[in-house]
Image 1 (cartoon, rainbow, N blue to C red):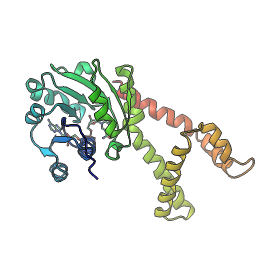
Image 2: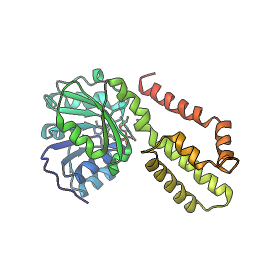
Image 3: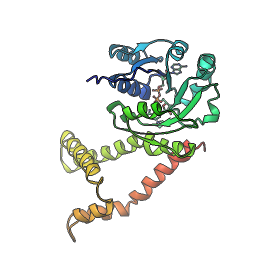
Image 4: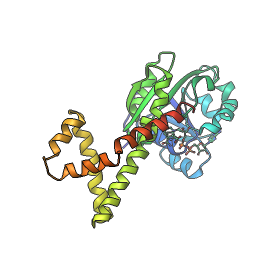
Length: 255
Ligand SMILES: NC(=O)C1=CN([C@@H]2O[C@H](COP(=O)(O)OP(=O)(O)OC[C@H]3O[C@@H](n4cnc5c(N)ncnc54)[C@H](O)[C@@H]3O)[C@@H](O)[C@H]2O)C=CC1
Ligand SMILES: O=C(O)[C@@H]1CCC=N1
């Protein structure tokens, strides 16, 4: 699975948990030399088996060309205090939600980024913002999937909802499809397989047409689909989704 990269940059991932594991695994598979730190033994052991080097935060930062931070927001300040004097001049990419550039005060080049857990498969949508130029940042982030250079920091905060949290919302909707299948007498395995197929293929189809055009093609006048669409409208599913993303974005912006 390992694809050879010409890149010789060393990347440190500080705080290998859910997101850090996914990023470290993907970057390792993409050919980078990856150094990881963390507190979850099973995660560290698994990354070690893939060829990542496990060490402490200060060694990782001293050795690396790029430092990725994936600790929880509550753990960021103490991590910054710990690495401050070895981070001088390094490029630090923070994926920590709700923490602004001004919260990451170090004598280093700081990048704000937001991605999602799908980076494990190279299928994430990653937004980043920084106030300096460095082509390699985009090159590293592109290994995680699609990349978007944000116009300002606010866009990165918004992406916490639209990229970071969104896979959980999609999984919640797919879970409801599975319950609906069970409720109608389909078994869970068949319901899940069908739901995954429909979500994947619909995403593909919508690359070249608008959702509206697509819905009209599927919906026969006085047929079956319109009955389901009426129920979705009755339950105001569109409002529920807008509300969910807005509430998430508000929290990401600090309220
Ligand atoms: N989980 C997700 O899908 C996403 C998470 N994020 C952001 O990524 C960050 C991490 O989230 P998760 O991976 O879910 O959290 P997590 O809790 O699974 O991972 C963080 C890891 O950092 C470790 N840690 C804490 N302090 C440390 C320190 N000083 N040195 C080394 N390791 C330390 C913890 O033990 C933990 O294992 C958060 O700031 C979150 O906002 C962003 C987008 C998506
Ligand atoms: O729930 C959270 O706060 C983090 C940020 C985006 C996804 N997980």
